[in-house]
Image (cartoon, rainbow, N blue to C red):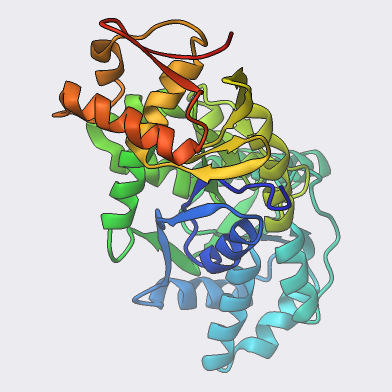
Length: 362
């Protein structure tokens, strides 16, 4: 098939660039579930940002730690509105500028400034280690925050003798409409999506927080059937800390994230020979002899159960356990009938009288 992700369902938890990521995935055939876990909002009251800016002007920083492109642009735009942009650029131009990643680097250069160093890992921890090794005792560091305070970074720098000016530019807030996020959590818990993408560590934390008493169920799904795909190592950290294996590209870019998913998801599929056909199971479809056959959730659930034990007879009671709650044995018969129609390969699923169903592998 030309569309590498056809038949797969992928959840997108990003807010700001969700449409761009969704388009990249859909272009490769994926079905996308949009469910922003957080949204970035400007500070409702910019008093703290203005105070931090004035502090930087009064005590010019020896070091600028630029964490994000959107944060640096927002800071300079706010300073422009207060008539402080030129003085601010002047003091920052004399600083040792550390840009945590390429987006921050781009914003620094667009402002007419020059970065002096960037970490290979795009990690705050690596930045702190670099600065401490370089020596920060007696220095003033302007730390541009990315959504939330970073007490571990601030404390480590202060412990090394620095004075840290925290610069809050924006903050994270829950999504305006939480319904899509809760729907995605339902789908992850029920293993009805193949992958979930994360483009920020706070978004991963927010999804788990929103799961509430189902957090362990969601984590179990992410440790098994549902691929957790993160844009980079920093984003992955909350999941890795909870024992979730993650997929992440070497470079934190949306295009690289999509390429990683394209490489990873097809390798996780199950392929069986049955009834003279070659079947590959994808999230909401089966590929039968190279042809994609989309299936509804109930027939797909039955096919997964049968494919997990090819040739073995599964009773109606056993198959019933794979269907949504409230289903009865008649629902199993209906699911099998719809499966046969959907596969358009009548010999694949065999009825064994008074016993149940199996995949015909002989």
